Length: 339
Ligand SMILES: NC(=O)C1=CN([C@@H]2O[C@H](COP(=O)(O)OP(=O)(O)OC[C@H]3O[C@@H](n4cnc5c(N)ncnc54)[C@H](O)[C@@H]3O)[C@@H](O)[C@H]2O)C=CC1
Ligand SMILES: O=C1[C@@H](O)[C@H](O)[C@@H](O)[C@H](O)[C@H]1O
Image 1 (cartoon, helix red, strand yellow):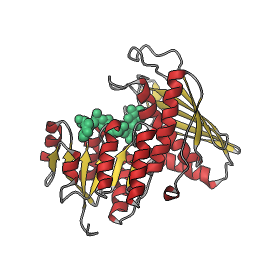
Image 2 (image 1 turned 135 degrees about the horizontal axis):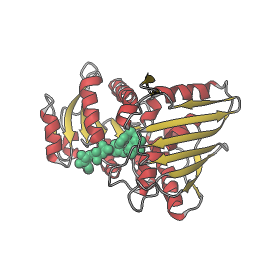
Image 3 (image 1 turned 45 degrees about the horizontal axis):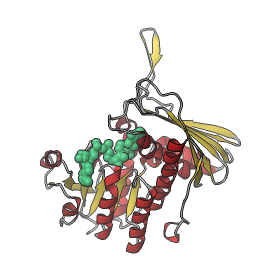
Image 4 (image 1 turned 60 degrees about the vertical axis):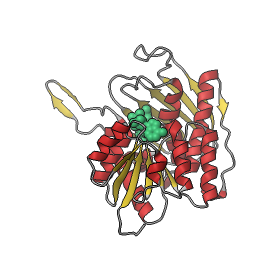
């Protein structure tokens, strides 16, 4: 692709996240244009394509990726559909930004890892957008700076107003806690070695059969202990918080809720309803950074190795959730390709 040309992006999957990324690529991000949208629901893709000049609607990811005006692919279909789209894009040597999770289990993530290594150069960035959130970036800088000493523990809280009706117990780990699996590895620069999932008595707002909330305990290779509260139906808003407990101090993020208002005998602020609003800046930064790196012929951000490592931790988490015991994480040795 000539460097002066805008990057032609095919967005695969045009549901909640895909449609938001189409808007972002069209209205917010510079250096890119949406040349193709793909959805198995033909009407959904057509409606989006009709609103963008030079954009074509497809129902098959392969057909979009074969188009002359497609230089790169943003995958925002559901997790189980990612592997096929990733392998298709890698087969065509196209750069990819793939929404999390890379894939829902370790075996499929390993197949993607093998395909990228066969290609001989990295092509995939995984959409772990919290790495692009201002507060998480500040926390990372503080931990890396060393003035607080070693991080001993992390406490994560991950609360959703409610979950879509098709959400399952496994998805609470694979689709939600996968973010904490990734930020924990990134913040501490360590692999996670074991997972234990505890299931307190569920809220009456959870659908029958769903254990909600859950409490996930992670152990890391250098002995840090990390807890994650995942609450899918907290009923009052979307809240993501983290606290690092270090040898010489603690750092807490996620308490900022914008302006604090005092009126009518009370004070307080607003809580965002969902991730689209809470992490808007992070998604913008993530997608801009992917477009910029791709136009320079480079790759940045979370790699397929990060996606695989998170998938392996999730797999251990789902087993622990089912069997009610501590499960050790099985990871292959990190290939030199990803160091
Ligand atoms: N980074 C983040 O904070 C978030 C990431 N996500 C991720 O984004 C992805 C999409 O999630 P949502 O937009 O919430 O789902 P959604 O269900 O709203 O949209 C998925 C879309 O993909 C389409 N689709 C299904 N199979 C397909 C295939 N094989 N090829 C093309 N299109 C296909 C569906 O028809 C639907 O329009 C998932 O990987 C999810 O985990 C979702 C929410 C937040
Ligand atoms: O990725 C996301 C969703 O898929 C998931 O359902 C939510 O729990 C997360 O907070 C959000 O960031």
